[in-house]
Length: 312
Image 1 (tube, rainbow, N blue to C red):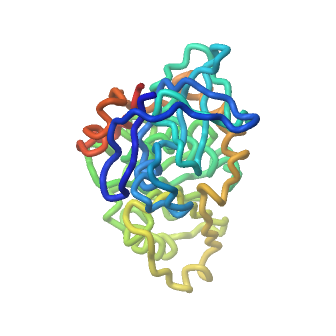
Image 2: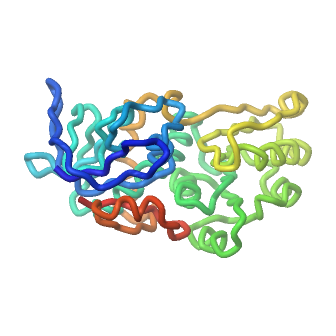
């Protein structure tokens, strides 16, 4: 079968012919229709993801939308395997398979799954967002951040503050439903806008978060808990946190991702997310690219705010 193949962590995947999957007992084979290139997929293909480097050669991709032999449209999640989803077929445990709504576009579903589930699970499983609460999204101009704004609204947030750098992208996020947009580099303005947030969805970490936490703590007047959920580290993997920040307010720092959230929990939330996508409540901008062009798609600068999806 045709597939993307990683033979070196120092080079992008290339188009190749590989053996068809040999399913283990109990697994089913799914015909892949679409598989998205996400930051999580990129880090795994480069051997940098915290869950493990994986063995080479490897087919990248941790999830896909496809069809079963019975013709059902399904979402599949593979996670830790060297036989990923960027191929014509993938073998998967039925527990990692979810039937999707009829008529849902496979490219849209594949693009929405990983970025959408990151904030959906954070707001449903890591914290229980209450109706009317305030959510601050750090890194709101990326695909996942823009979706997080929509998802927070869909799950009942009363006010959503979107923080990012690019003014044009922030304007797009405002049209997607953000109540307030702020330059993430302006810690004082960010603290003024989001100082009393109940939940922070953080895709940045690093120096961006290092500047923001003390500013928000200083500006905060609310006595309610502040749940700070680390989902990504686009601005850096580490930060320095003053201990006073943990004493001055009820700051609760937690993560949401592979390991802190069981795969079964992720899969259980996919149907509701995909229902929201199918209804248009949550959307995602996409760019579909043939699997044969994987190397070009991997290295080309992507369109801002769009998720590239490979189609076999």
